[in-house]
Each structure stands twice: as structure tokens, then as C-alpha cells.
Image (tube, rainbow, N blue to C red; front, side, top):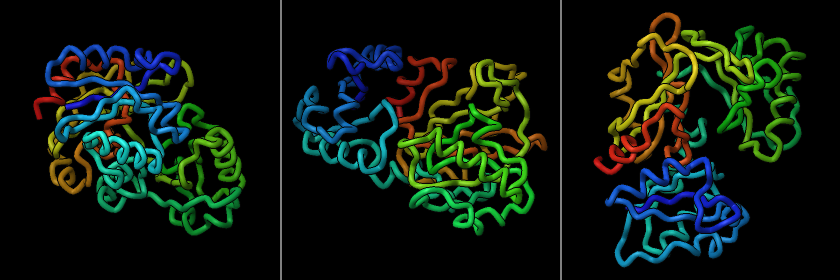
Length: 298
């Protein structure tokens, strides 16, 4: 199996510093063939230059990318270029998009996750274009994100909306969110019901509220790793009830994905969101050696 990391942007032979510990763990496992690509060249569409360090495999080989997020069209180009080298990424472009974009998977997980509405943002934001998506929530509190990410570290300014029916409030938060996302905004706007989760602490830098969340890594319908999502705060020996998600996991159209789950104040466990596991970060508390051993064993 080939594990593909991003280089550091200055040298094609040195891994991105963020992935240095993962790179070392993967390289020490005989089952893996580790390679580097240029993320900058890849995202600029220079596929030959980006993949110049990857040799063509003699026989079909499964590949797993461990790097920065790619937009679906970029992932498709990456996937097809690797196929020419006889390397097949673990998730097809459709499978990547299914977990990367929340609207793609919402119908599958909606019984396990907060109420959600969404719509493509075709031009500048006009609140009247999203009236149907907002009125679903009445005067409930909601969260705003794009199809992939939120600005949760700007909690009050660009993430949390106390009253979905307060147009002035919605305008202010959404416009700030769009400003902060800039060119990284993915597709459109997603509005999500705010639900009260078991509190953990406040983030030491941004001050955003932290809750008792966990990140599950799932490969071939099997949970291979479970990590505390946050590296600060006291989880007080809380352990997720994984059995609650056994029935939905096989319905998720991906071979390798993450499922972020959290405990509500009423004790019920919910899915916060899914992600393609190739571009999902490992928390600092994760044991990299154990993760890569689990990855190869399934």
C-alpha cells in the first residue's frame, strides 16, 4: 500500500512539518511504500510536476493520501493522474465528495445528526435567496458553515446565530463567515440546528466552547481508531457508545472516512459530521504508530 504525503513546499524530498510524525510512523512499517507530492503544484493543476516523485507501480496498488484538503475537481485530477501510474486511491472521486461535502451525505445521516439545510451560493450573499433554508428553523439557534468547513474559532462573529429568524443577526454572521472563508469557500452555505452538547471547556486561544467530541476513523466499514477530538479539557472518562452507529456505517459510500460524534446533554450520541479520512487530521493525542498499524491491518 502506498501512503502519499505532501512535501514542505521548499523541498520535494522533505515532508510537510505538520505530517512529520505520521510520515515517520508510516515509513517504519514494512507494509507501506511512502511517497511525497507537491500540494502547491497539484492545486495549480501542474499534475506532472506535482507527482514527479511517484514512480509507476508494476502492478495495481492501493494508495492513501494524507495531506491537505482538496476540492473535488482537484481530487479527481489527482486520482486520475495516479491511475496512470497504476496507483488507485482508496476512495474514488465520488466517494471523496460524498464525505467531504455535507450535503452529499446528509440524507444518509440525517437521523443521527442535527437538522440541516443548504444551498449553493452562486454570487454575493442575499438573505432573501436563503429564506426557505432559514425558515425551517423558526427562532431556533443555528450554526453556519460552507459545504466543508465552519469558522468555529470565530464563534460569535462568524459561526453561531442565536436566532434564525433575526435577519439582521443572520446577515451579520453570514457575511463575516463569507469574508473569512474568502476564496476557500466551498460551494454554498449550510445552516445547522444548534444542539446542546456536553461541555468540555473553552478553547485556550479562540475562546470557542469545546464539547465532548470524538473522531472515529473507519476503513471498509470497520472502526479502526477512536480519538478524543480536542486535546484540551477533561473528558472525565467519557467513552463513546459506538454501537449506536453500527447500522449507519455500512450506508456511507466511502472506503475510508471519519465520523465525528458528540454527546448531547441529554446523553444521546449524535454525528457531528463526516469527512474523507485522507484529509482528516489526527488529534495531537493520537498515537501515530498505533494508527498506521491499525490502518494496514484492515
